[in-house]
Length: 417
Image 1 (tube, rainbow, N blue to C red):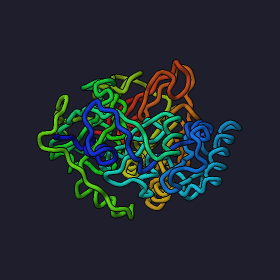
Image 2 (cartoon, helix red, strand yellow):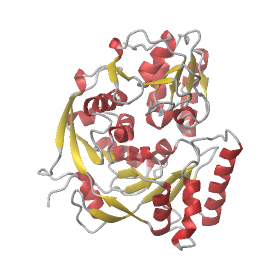
Image 3 (cartoon, rainbow, N blue to C red):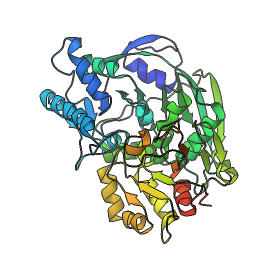
Image 4 (tube, rainbow, N blue to C red):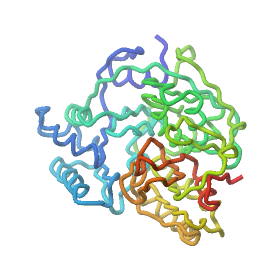
């Protein structure tokens, strides 16, 4: 039976086969939770009748959404995670300090995911790790509790959409533009419970950070997961970050796909997703005169070092427009330090930005940049639903770090070109 890349990974973790629509029980390589979802899973954990997690090295707990703790409730959530991690002897617990960071940037950086892994996380953007050639997907807190207990999860094997990428993107066009273009083309439910499988000669022209961004937002098209082939760039990244041996899977030549979407990377331009859906995509040059109040550069989608470099390149020697708040959030402490060493943070501060410690913060309307009624924000985050970053009558416009930085300088949606 021919299989896609995703189906092969699932088959290897289950019964040896994985047909679209089939329900399987699959063994897990990693279970992830954060400070919103893990406390719920921790409360449910005793109901599964086991005293200990299935593997102390295969559970990762990362307080990142409301940290550094924004209020008493946030502190209590983290305290529950901390106590559970100590009680269970969980190896991969990362809180505020040297090893902290936004979970989906931190785990690849720490080498906790490698090619061929099967990862579940109680966070919808767990699909990020498909950039490494892993199957990773978001689940609910109860499924997380079950995964921590027995080391398995149930899945319905997804059908797939092939996304063929060709050519090379122009300067200022990044992975964020690629995924927003795709979502704009197929819609927020265009890949519902399917695997988005990226292929084509254009993959080699995308950096690993671009791939992380694209895989991260696969869920915004309704996908179960997004996944990239394992190439030389992937292997180089894994060699630098992980001591584990990758397991490489590739789709069969005659694998079946529900449809094929072809994207010419060279033809893409900077885009922006207007409220209130990631699919409401327009070319930046056709955005019109949209004045803004805030810019956020960061998140698990675009808080990596290349994102910091691009934003700093646009801002260097210039200043944020009057009346605009610009918040820059490096995704991990390691990225923060690297940005500091490269002088990027100095560039941001001199341009009139505020630099935050690693946190999800404003992305989910948590803290560190909440919007008031009527305010508009250009953000490098992944969702722009009603009330996502604050008041239900505020607006979020999704864009790349280059567009976000240019918009901060102009005081309106603007292109770096």
